[in-house]
Image 1 (tube, rainbow, N blue to C red):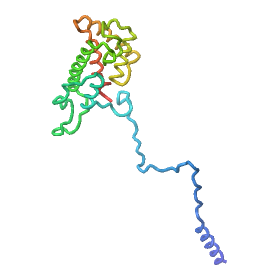
Image 2 (image 1 turned 45 degrees about the vertical axis):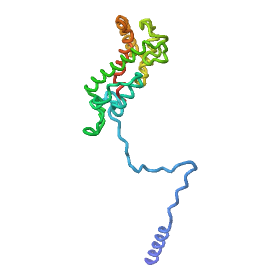
Image 3 (image 1 turned 180 degrees about the horizontal axis):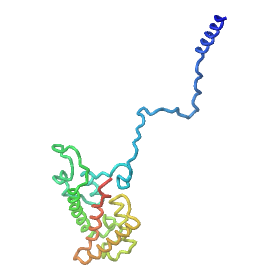
Image 4 (image 1 turned 90 degrees about the vertical axis):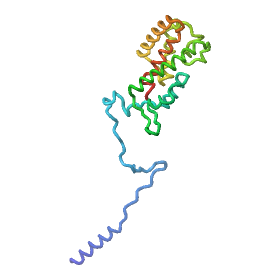
Length: 221
């Protein structure tokens, strides 16, 4: 009896080992089989916005000297002639002799020289536009119709149109809301003071240009 029972168990075991696992059904047409990520979980949580002045993601970076030079030429319409040479190295350009990495850190030295450069290019461009009657030939005053006359006579709508155009040109985003109102007030006051200066009508445009160029929205990305 024991032999018969043992033989029966062995037979069942052999039969069980011989059974094959049923194959998975083929995928439906157009359906991709799931593939695991070979790199594992690479997700990095976003930083706390409260630690970055409300921003999510990386902190803004300052333009390199080469990027700054090109941005000024495009936005203002003329290059910053004094930038090339020793000043470029002072502002962070690598010389690959002593310094082999571009500096993109904002600092007081950069801010000081940039303000000087903004005055240089903005005042020169604004002065040049006084003699240009065609708006298409001008950069800083392109939205002002006809030749430049008394800027105090511009309507509020024309002032706002000008500031929206300039802020979009310099920053890539337009002024709006309360901030646009504050800039409009600034331009109106600058136009009144400029008109009181002999041959100083262009200085209102220069003042706005300098303010736009020295704003952090022009320097960072």
